[in-house]
Image (cartoon, rainbow, N blue to C red; front, side):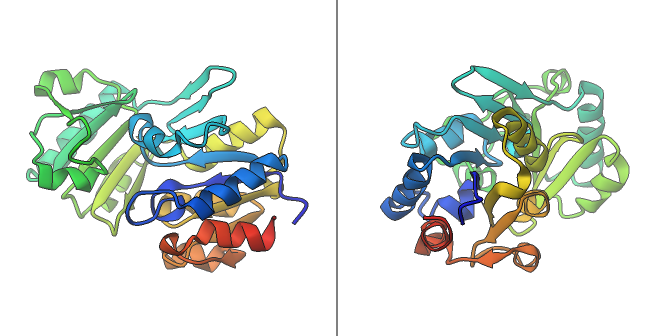
Length: 264
C-alpha cells in the first residue's frame, strides 16, 4: 500500500507480546517501514518511564504519545505537549470515587511520577501495569494528593465507572481497559486520536494515509480517525468491527504479519 505514510503502534496487546517483549520479526518489520520513509509513531496508555523501556531499541521513533494522549514528546525538536486535569476537578473525582467505592485504589500520574495515598502490594502492582522491579508509587497524604494537577488518574476496584462519566464527563475522558478492571481518567481534550492528529500536523501527513494498530477501547478514536485501522486478533470486538483488516494476535507477530502483507 504505497499511500501509507505513517504507522501508529499501540504497545500492550499489540506490539508487545504477552511476555512484554518486542519480537525480532516485529522489530524488523517496523524498522523496514521506517527505512522506506514511513513515519513510526508510538501511542500508548503507559507513562514515559514504563513505555521507554520497551521502545528504547526503536531509537528511530521521534514522536511518542503517552498517557493515552495526555503527553506527547518529539525527541528531535525536544518539544512537549502536556494536558493535565485541573486540581479542583481531580479533587472532586477523588472524593466521588472514595465516597462510592472506599476500597478502590487511586493512583495519580503527574509528569512521569506516580502518587497514591494507599500503599500498593506487589501483587496489586500489575493492575496498574507496574512490574515488581519498577519503582513503586510514592505514598503521600491526602492533602498533597489534592494539591496535584494529574496527567492521568488510574483507578482499580471501581466497577461503576459509568458514574464518573455521568458526573464529570464535561471535564474528563474516562476509559475502562484490561477487561474493565482499570479505569483511566484524562483531561477532556486528551486522547490518543487528538495527540496523533497533533503529530500528523507536525509532520505533514493526512490521517487518511495512516495505518494504526490497536487492541483495546483506548484505540477506538484512532480507528475512526485514521485511514487504515488494523485490529489484532486479540482485540476487543468493537475494534474488529471498525477495522479494515484483522491481523494475527500480539503473540503471533500480528504487527509484522500485517506490515509484510499490506505495506512492505
